[in-house]
Length: 211
Image (tube, rainbow, N blue to C red; front, side, top):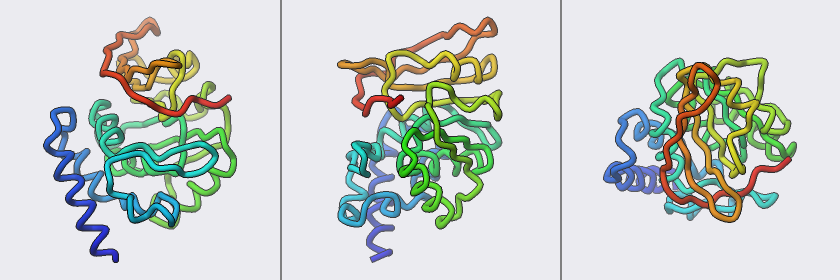
């Protein structure tokens, strides 16, 4: 079965490589490295390498692979970059990010205690135990580990949370689905004065931020 999963994962990543908005080799390597089937409920493992979101409990989902790849690519992450994630979920996106920057450089905040505990256990079992996870309101970020080179949200918010923006260094990058009924993926760079230079990356659909 493991060989079948590996074949399916490689086929998926080959398809992602043909997308115009997934260009970085480090992103593709990370997508190949992380076993998505380990992050979905057992009843959905056969669908793990279909390019679509899947339920993970508590109304949350694991994002479609192409969306994870697009977001990792858009942030232009480099090894050693310090990254804040808002919305750990099952831990898959954090693991992909960790493949690029190193697990010790990923700090993730999850609102739901059960999801956070399950993600922590899963990540440790898969060798990503250096990823830091805490339970809390994502709108507050995680100031103790700031400043970050990049921050991203895996849940939709009306705007970039001000605390998260403050925790990103000047020149750092942010990425989030912004909006309520209608959402847009918005990329931003933090200016020295704390304001954001933003770019619209198109329509998306994410679960809403809790808290």
